[in-house]
Structures are given as C-alpha cells and as structure tokens.
Length: 221
Picture 1 (cartoon, helix red, strand yellow):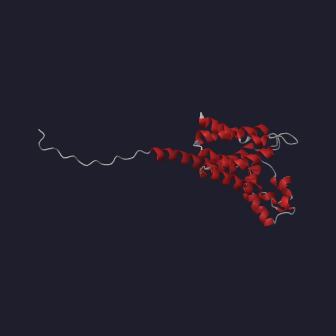
Picture 2: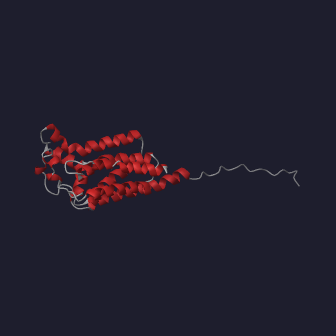
Picture 3: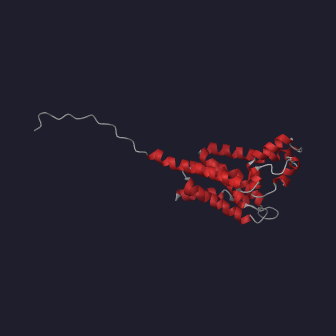
C-alpha cells in the first residue's frame, strides 16, 4: 500500500504542468515541466524502494496519459516527446536515489533545459556556436523537437538562440521518432538489467562455512 501511494504521488508530480494559461492547458508547458522533473522523480522513486517494473512504467504511463490529453494543442508526435521524458526518468532511476542526488539532478536538468533561453533574459542573442551547443544538450529542446514542434521557429528560442542562422535538420531529435524511441529503449533495458540484478545481489544465499570433521570416539561401541 505504501508503494502504491508513492507511485501515485510521483505520478501526480506531472500535474502542475497542466495549470492553465491564457488559452487553457499548454502542451509546451506540460512538456517543459515533465522534462525538468522527470530525472529527479526517477531518482526519488529508486530511493523510495520502487522497482522500475512495474512502478516506473506506471508513472510513465500516467505522464503519457497527460501528454495524450493535451496533444491536440500543438503537438504532432506525443510519442516522441514521451520517449524523451521517459528516458530522463529512467536515467534518474539508474543514477540512484538520495534526496541530495535528486535535487542535484533537478537543478542540472533545469539548467540544461533552459540554457538556450539565456539570450532572451540577457537581451542579446547567444553566439552562434554556444546557441547550437545549448540547443543540442537541452532536454527541453529534444522533447519539443521529438514531439514535432518546430523549435527553430519557437518564440522562446528564435530570438534567444538566433535559430534563424541554424541549418534545418540540425538535430536527430527533429527527424522522426526513431532517435527518441532508441534513447528510451536503451535506458529502459539498462534499468531493467539493474532491476533484475539488485534482488539477486541482496538475497544471494551465503555458503555455509565448512565444519571441522568430528572424530569418532573410540570408546563408542
């Protein structure tokens, strides 16, 4: 029962991304929120003793339902975006779970996710080399591109990262669902392997120590 409640609480961590904006629930805002909390949630799940199968899959299923719920609003491929979110959650699970590590993962994900937006806040476009690098390493950009969003023309990134100067097809994430699906499958297999090894390592029976041979009492009949 405790594990079920923990799964529910972690799954509900995606709900704040549905908070309505001017036009209701924003798909891009939901993706951004899930991207930033996914790795930390995966780390917390493992720290709480949850298994990747079935608990992690249940969390990702709930988040997939949220994406499907708002996918009609500007998201061509919810599967691609979900794969990136799932890969981030799985990487957090693989990294292991303490509260400090979960907080570190959250901060690192937020910094990487929002790095391409730095020019927007600074008031000047980023240098081209830094703009392209920040777009390549940003999990937010990866999730949006995998979801079918034209990130090079996205208002949040267009002026900040000078995306008009970048070539089309600049990232594998924007070229269909193969790259994000491959990323999720690889991380899934790693987490599954980790899950299968952990119980055997914890419950491996120890070999009994050999007992010294007892000599027969010569006085016995």
